[in-house]
Length: 511
Image (cartoon, rainbow, N blue to C red):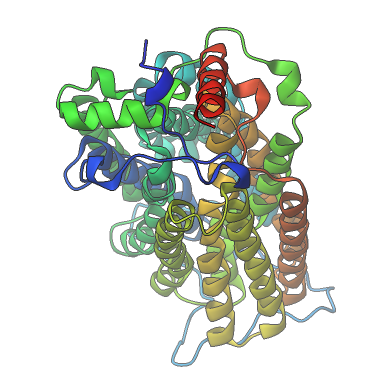
């Protein structure tokens, strides 16, 4: 698509030295309320709520799907074993009985770890192609089909489980394959829709749907499992995703120029604010400069480290609440969800604060991204370490886990949107690259957790939390040293170079 260029460009400051550049005047900014860009953010929020619900429902349902009477922990371990029951609980560790006719399976800890990680095997393969194609064609079709395909496949989960763990593993991998395009497509869409001074709040609002979806899905899954049986979880969640897709395809467009209901005022504002960086890239991309880009590798390494703790808790926290804390499945679902409620709220607040700091020129984009990443990762590491020392204190363990994920939500305004800072034109592709690497913990962390906790001991879970905390600290240090908020030279088009040259000539004439 062709966009205006030259003197109409009003981009966010690239670095401290450009903070004095004029931005769009506040009286020229159309209100966000009921705007097309805000409506799209809300629909994205609901879409990611659905896909994260589809992603985590197996974590809680697994407690109901497994027949624990056939699984006995090792009797030869000298480690500290399961904690006492919570106050007022009578049968927290008893087998979870399903309604009559609902099957349960004798899957050991290792099998459960592989099944919980299966989603990410498929998720790996469509991140980069999804980002590349979304940048070129626009992301709305890819995001919509990604959610719809994952939702439809989810409804086959009970059938696959009945056929055996290998079939369930394959189905979960296919779900991941379909969902892999969603986040790169989101990033690609915001590169065309989000004015620079609104990026943090719009992107954290839409992306925070993941945490909200986990918050809703975890207790709801527990309630459904206990009342009507675990198969209904997958039918209901899958149906919700299919319903969402109808609204998405009816009301969303990949860019402002093709949106049927956007006002002329809002369309012109978005196009002028973003400038040429809102155009899609061609078929060729600067592969070698990307591979040699230190800021890009800083994002990759930091996301790997951050995702390790996030995916550890996302996939394995219900198992910890069941095997160690001995909460019943309803309490398990609610308490496992609390961290994601906190992360949802904290990430949205972080997005607003980050935009304010940039808009008022308190800090440069680089400093803001590093600050929020440092706060999120180091705080999460500290509280994960505290969990390991809380032992069997149920209140402290739940409190520390909640605080760890809550404050970790600050990274949503840091490293997780840094791709659009360093290369808006290639934002979808870069998210595909960074998220592909960031998905590796989703595969390895549940398997490692299953290995450490094979004997279902408190000591094994302590090792899980220590490892996650250490990896978080490493990620914080890497991004603090090597991260950047500047647009990289390889991401600047010839059109922008001409506009910058024209600006320089204007400055020299005026002086």
